[in-house]
Length: 469
Ligand SMILES: *Cc1c(COP(=O)(O)O)cnc(C)c1O
Image (cartoon, rainbow, N blue to C red; front, side):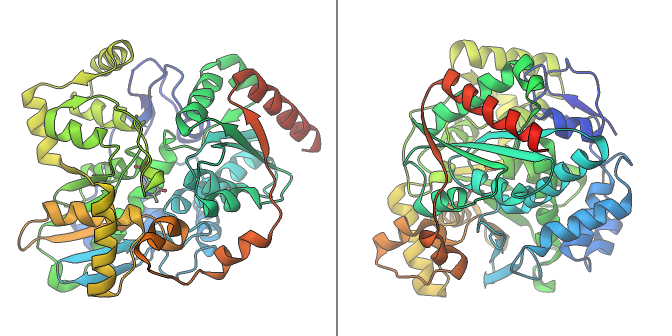
């Protein structure tokens, strides 16, 4: 298997080169040239596999033989040893039509740990076998940064710099990032919002000379390996439904922002996982809901909500879906993306919209409704949802049909977002790993929203890293 760009202007690449490239050099996103298919019989055989075993099966279709089996197995073992639950991503029954897949048992209590714990191991491996310098640069609205730092802290051959918006991430998120004292970690707290951080990062990666001079590598979900690691738990969830649910239509509801997590579901479905609808749950930043309902994709005004990790107006993985929607025609994708850049919006025709609506349903959940859902499920089921997961449950309630099974992804632990939970006068117990954070010293550098100043900080940090090794 080789990897190509959605915009068609990058020579086909192998697996490791695709990981290293991150954003495709032509501005597109990397995808496999052919999506492998998994037969119904193979799926049946996978039912008894552990999360780690399933991970290895799925990756074997994609790594092109570039990583020896034993090495991959070691990496996977180490990646998920840091999870607090033996099943890694356990499936919990809420009632006979609703299951929650808990994705928050990793070191930073959000789903991003699942992919980023592995990505840390993978970058470390690539650094070792290829002698590549790995300088990770990313922007975060909170969870990605914390998970990425947790994935690479203290690892040899890797330095990581994360930009976050100053005073605009949750307290727990800030502490998770800034209380890490390893020398290979730099936190820049930018006076601006998340979009400002993202913009600087895009410009630095877009400067191909700067990117190669400082060996910049991406950890955001434009990196295909994150998408691939996330497909594993779609398979795991489906295969771990009880006998009573088998044979029924299974829909999966996913709290969504950048369209990364749910694109993994789309990929799993294309590989042959027989799931019904993929339900996109967003908050009041509802660009994806508007697209699925009207065919128009147009960033709106940024809103701050109870689910800040989904406060996103431009869903960076959307282009991957567009590629398949447009019949794998990279010239068409390039045209649409150029139009989006030029006019600030794109619209698909009604035939394409029909196709979108057979594959997805979408709901933008209002702030009040998000809190109502948390209160209701706490009362009726004794299960405390975090505000992102609550949006997922609201979308499940809206779109799961009679007799169908719904799996909703729990993308974060409620302790991470107590700002919202406490509005309901629900008091929760904090896991020790979170409760202990506020006693630790913080390490971060506050900077202006200024590309030149940020570039200077990076030059110093990354140059030092090269000397220390
Ligand atoms: C990042 C995040 C999301 C959104 O995931 P995408 O892959 O960006 O769609 C949802 N919930 C939580 C808790 C997150 O951290």
